[in-house]
Image (tube, rainbow, N blue to C red; front, side, top):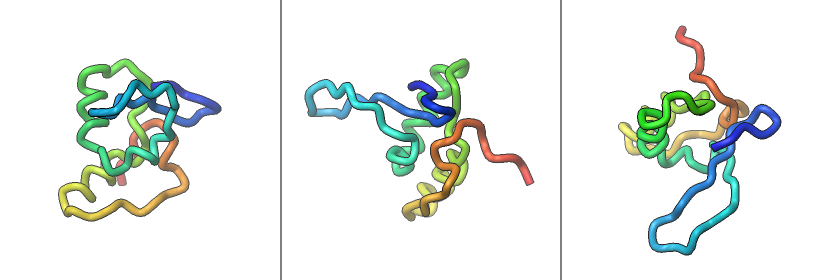
Length: 81
């Protein structure tokens, strides 16, 4: 996990695949919000979580795909309303 130009990027180890050194934008992991949440429970001092993690978790609970948002790759949870 790193910040690049103010945007979150993640290195992911895919099960059953060779090691991957690519960096993926947070938006590429919007369908894996539980794994992201577990990452931040394990590493609370890392930058992030993605701004729309709560929205992605809500979509997962409703078994629907999240719609892309312009701020998907920014860090920090979206402000409470």
